[in-house]
Image (tube, rainbow, N blue to C red; front, side, top):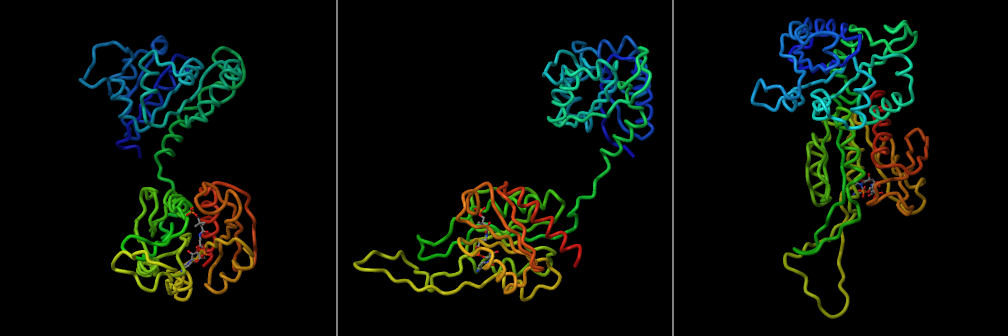
Length: 400
Ligand code: PMT
């Protein structure tokens, strides 16, 4: 079950050290590689040889002993760890890690590891409930450290209360759960996101475009990827890095966006169109730079395809989500678009409001669905809007 997993076990000085021996034995039975690091105080309870025999690996306990390999030992162990467990964890080690004190092999290795670190506290109940210890635990939790809560009962010192180290079985359950892949909520769902502006060429030097930066669309593409979706991001020119894991399709013009999207529409489950697409393009693109001359310059424009409408006309099973950037009659226009373009819902942003629409890190949106429900969301980050939009899109996808 834990075959190939490298678990570094930090053992600090408390009577619960004997339970750590059992923990190593259980982890070995699940085929984990266990590397034990002991503090000086831990050695007062159990010898390194005990852990060495149980783990079948050399036990590190002295910062300055002659190295066993050419690797810098604490860095090597820190890098090797897939999970770092400190059990038992005394108030002392929790306090030291919380305050960045690295004065022995264990604390230097914890400081150096990129792995998840989890503490199984074990101490006298008054030490455990002491606001200093509790404060340290809370601070470490906010930094991403995990804690396996101690149990309550009669402690070795005779006091009754919280502070008994979690049972080895519970710590093993935590470790197994940690390594069990979690099903992501959008696993297997194919999502197409369009983002950014289009640019429409006038001549080899000039073009017309709009103020979309791509932030809204990229936030949706990133969040959907994190939730396990297979994301295709069709984007006009922006200054943003495509999120890791997306299939990125760069385009420039509305016609290119139309073609790129139509090629992949059929395979999608959810299509979200945040892009600000130019409705018109110059009828003729001059092959040479247009020279200035006296008087006015007139230019004829022709309509670009309405990509969202085209998708709506041919969609079969896809959830279709539009965005609406308006400056007036936001709700009325948004409702009309739902009908005309066969949308499941539309995200309307009044781009005349501060903190909403183009270029901002936040948005203020109203989501209107085809059933006629309209929900206003106050100002929040584009990442938070992305979560709301994806949750609603998933609701429609699951109920198709
Ligand atoms: O990119 P940011 O700086 O983060 O800004 C985000 C945003 C303001 C661009 C975004 O939140 C937004 O509102 N996008 C839609 C902008 C828009 O062009 O709205 P629209 O009302 O013109 O178009 C309505 C819908 O039809 C949109 O989903 C649009 O992608 C789509 N459309 C429009 C024209 C066209 N020819 N084809 C289309 O598919």
